[in-house]
Length: 377
Image 1 (cartoon, rainbow, N blue to C red):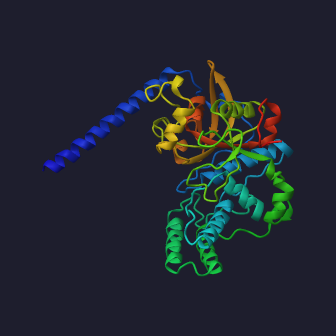
Image 2 (cartoon, rainbow, N blue to C red):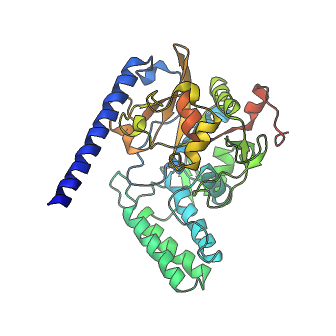
């Protein structure tokens, strides 16, 4: 009986804490000057948000959205790309590395911007009309069973001492084909036949080396290329340009104001995202604005309260009462649980300073701002 009472007391205490945080957050948001509608912004071209539903594929949704915007910006091409194409071939590459590393590499559904770029450079890309990536054909994504079967495969491979990569890849593709469908080798787009590679080269037509990833952490030298130390960096990518925090944020803001867009890698565990579901802010009862600096950012990263749990796409910026606000195209279910703005979040600059780990942008932005980097010509 005493144990039951203790459990009940613990649950009640947690409920009261959650209620008080929710109330304090609501009071904070109600008191600040902020955007109220998507229409207040002048966004870069982008397709409407799509709910990633029961998947961990935000990295593909956000990065492909960024690429779609770049296609429009650079040569006025409009093509909604297949979000599950990088997911399919990303898993193929992960199973290859898992076998060759004897199970030492990370095998999970998560990934980064580089996962999409790497797949496109190797396999090409297709429009969504050519590959919906859902063998169930029911209009929503659900990868629970897919992940369960792929993880079971990795367990089996470990038990077999990783003897045969070719067989492992074939078994992984059988699972992927079952849940995502077979990616096309040929398809028609606007009256012409393409392969994934020719569609990449003739329609998407981007210079892939022109895209740079930017981060801000003092665990590595500034103004140099560094490794982003997060679990989803399963390839050990060390091509992140490391900037001091002020320049990290100014660079991003300048890019948006110059007509570019930016895909971001962020932490969304904050109450402002998960509870409010509309405004990504850092309330003053958490940390005062004046204290949001490189040290605070680093502290939360090191203690695990900031992780790379979600990628999104920033498509616009606006100042409201002297405060920087960003319109963020989202794919996580939370962004679709409110009537407005459905599929979007409003994010302020403090959230970027404290909770955005990295972003990807076209390197031509460097020509638009006065910043000297050792690693960029």
